[in-house]
Image (cartoon, rainbow, N blue to C red; front, side, top):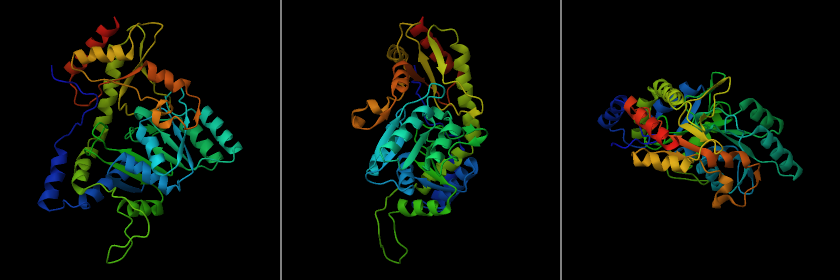
Length: 375
């Protein structure tokens, strides 16, 4: 049987048009028309006037934190239930992550635990420098509550929408709510440039500084002159060409991911102890980057690991949910508020294949195998 991957790249024919044009015109250097066009496409899709295309979502997170003034000795509020890149970028700045537990509705940062953390850090005389807010698996976080708390304590928001391109809250695209927003175009994301990312902001000065830092902080001079540390973080013109073609497909890709989630919900309904999650709250429009399930140990003897292993016998890739960062050896000394919710999600959850190129036969094979594992 051919392998069914969790979330593989899905290219169309559009990408080749931009790549061929770049090669014909010899625009294979780091910058060029594709890069400018890709940034304009992202700005238009997200509704934010300034975009800087970068080599990865992690690079965008790092620059975003630097733009907000995060440096050595600072603290940054961050969900524990996320991919490690979110918190690694905090370490790059010499800062310390302060981890916040999830809430059970969307699996994102819990407003109650955030309020607890803010009050406690204020009592200790060290308010965090920034709030790094994540939209996990393409599901909008509880933005009204989280943004209100950030405003109350005058803490700027960096919005990690790496998994959430095309998702919205109250019809406003995710990535546009923070002072800075970031996206990832890694190979497993809903759109890909092979490897890449982007930073968006409504502040022209922040965008200017992001470009400056991302190109080795080269001062304006005919020779190479540098007054501060910079980074080699810009996306190449060739990869931006892939991105231009991919951006044309964004509405179709989001539509298909949501169809896949609904297909699973229909065809896995009634299995003992299994629920697809999280549900979509009113006002939220998730891109359903990955379809995820939870198992109830009171209703089934199956575990996420036993289901994952059984799927592998049919050459189907699945994956546990993110292991909370406060449980990772790298972050044993980091402050943590709560922890029971995201630890429980990790213990009970699994990601199912969600690639937009899957056929109906692929989906039937997956559903049949999941049923075998649970019945």
